[in-house]
Amino acid sequence: MYKPLVAVVGRPNVGKSTLFNAVVKKRISIVEDIPGVTRDRIYFDGEWLGHEFTMIDTGGIEFDDVDNNFFTSMRYQAELAIREADVIIYVVDGKTGIQPQDQEIANILRSSGKPVILAVNKIDSVEQEINIYEFYSLGLGDPIGISAVNLMNLGDLLDEVLKYIKEIPVDEDDEDAIHIALVGRPNVGKSSLTNALLGQERVIVSNIPGTTRDSIDTHWTHDDTKFVLIDTAGMRRKAKIDLPVERYSVVRALRAVDRSDIAVLVLDGVDGVTEQDKKIAGYVHEAGKGCIIVVNKWDLIDKDSKTSLKYTDDIRRELAFMQYAPILYASALTKQRINRLADLVKYVSEQQHMRISTSVLNELVEDAQLTNPAPAKNGRPLKIYYMTQASVSPPTFVLFVNDPQLVHFSYTRFLENKLRETFGFEGTPIRLILRGKK
Ligand code: GDP
Ligand code: GDP
Image (cartoon, rainbow, N blue to C red; front, top):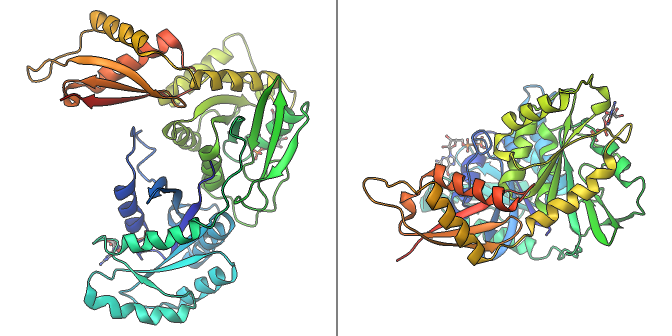
């Protein structure tokens, strides 16, 4: 489903990340924390009064080749927001008052035609509300006074965001089709893989309402299975991008992951797994999406009989949270194994949608308890009553116990392994939710 994107823009120190975190704290619960992924979170999916949206702190994005001139980096932030976002929250500082750069950024935002909400932050008390009036001169309509620190007026701000979100046309995506996102760092070969993959197919390209102008999805059908390849960064038609490459091409990649069922994480065989790859993989995992790892440019690697095993070891170690993802060694250039990708996608889709009956799950739980009895904590034994599957894609299980506090992390890991040994669930994360029973 298409989720509207809300971008937070503003000078350093106006309180963007404080605001962002205040909204995050109110709105989302992270299912599983992966070290290194959530620490500098700049992106999250949230919901306000039943409307889902994605929020991004553009201040947290690092651009390549940005000098230390913060105005340049601010302009990039603003341009990125204009290019990608549906609604922009422009944060200014109510304590310092209007600064010269505020007007310049306001001009850029105003002339973009995108909806802009002007938030005057650090209005920590009612007495300080008079400080918002000078910001009318930015020409961005009524400023909203907020305090990110004191959580004041955040509801009003989100209400304002909703006004615009409600007007965005509803996604008419084909719900039956498997949505695929090819993600990875620049130059790993995403465009080449796209072309190689689609080379043999009869494809239809279409613009999706609400997405940016240069974003084109590709639809095709193979053996009665419908596929949609979500465009990231104008893969099919190299878009003219006038921004320096932003870190991990983060916005496009994450949005594509959001809309996808399955992410194909493309690695460059020559470089191996980099920090950026780990980040992207972490988002895919957290988002609960299926994942296939393609090690591209395999033609460039000097190989012997042990090479792919060694690569697999490295990938399993570096992307330890993603043991479930199948790995395909391929070359977009020579087309080696490209024809296997569509079948693999179909297979992972089946795995994501597998449903296990409660009775079969309870046999598994009983078995598991026999081989590895749940340990007691502080002298209190853990009692497991039963397990049931709540949903698919990602497969989500609810475990009813006497007290969730008694369940050690290693025990849920053990149960997850049991589920995988027994049923597979290849290519998809699994979620295990604990519920206490009264
Ligand atoms: P960013 O650079 O725009 O992301 O700004 P930060 O969120 O890092 O905040 C910069 C400084 O402003 C920090 O010292 C915050 O504690 C402070 N700050 C943020 N929001 C508020 C607020 O609502 N009121 C006050 N008084 N200080 C704030
Ligand atoms: P993107 O930025 O991820 O879309 O990467 P591109 O598809 O534009 O590829 C970046 C560069 O890598 C181009 O010069 C491609 O020709 C090259 N490339 C892509 N795939 C392969 C491959 O499988 N083998 C080799 N040798 N080069 C490749």
